[in-house]
Length: 275
Image (cartoon, rainbow, N blue to C red; front, side, top):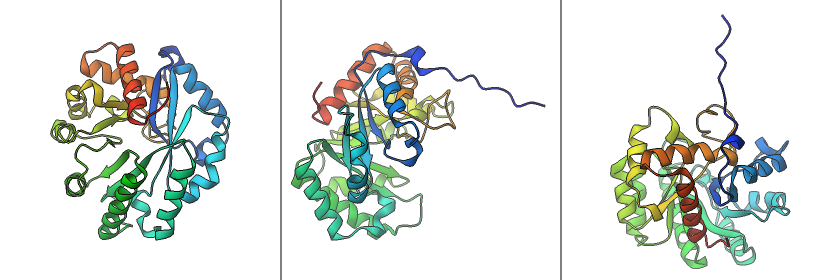
């Protein structure tokens, strides 16, 4: 029996006003080497005005930043991912400090945090690397973007103990329920919603999204990962954010264009971007 064909809507058929922001993507990766310019063009046609590209360490930043020389709509984030903590040295921190001093497109320290799902990096190493990068964020006066996987309570404890309550902080790729969302909001932080909000099983995530204050909510792809329905299982890209926005608007009982504009404005304020 032939496999059932999956109908995949074209994001350009659902294009939104050119004011959206994909707050977190990895477009420097090899997954985009064959069509990066086309991906960026589709993003604009779908309504994405700006994209945050995340570089996972100073070596990647130096090697790949030039990929976006012709694309001023792309701003940069830079941090040591918790799963890469074992490769971290003080020289990395010094290189990151120099990069933030020299490159105005670098708008945040991230993604940094704790990841206890993967077992490759010892927890004590992750804690040390996180604390040092939090100190860097304060020194260079940049917001923080947090990666957290199966380490919610531990991440919260570090951030609260380090005095980051009220500091500009974005919880990247939020995938949990209302309880965690409420604590993040109480601490004065922002929440970024990825494509899995569209998955049928994620009712708790949709409940959480519904209670986030309108001025604390952002959208993201985490491209090339976590594509929303109807593109689940395929490479994600910024244009597909329109499907995430549609689901978030539905969960909140809001008009999708109004939500799109509000989330874009929130991202521009958080990252201090020009409109």
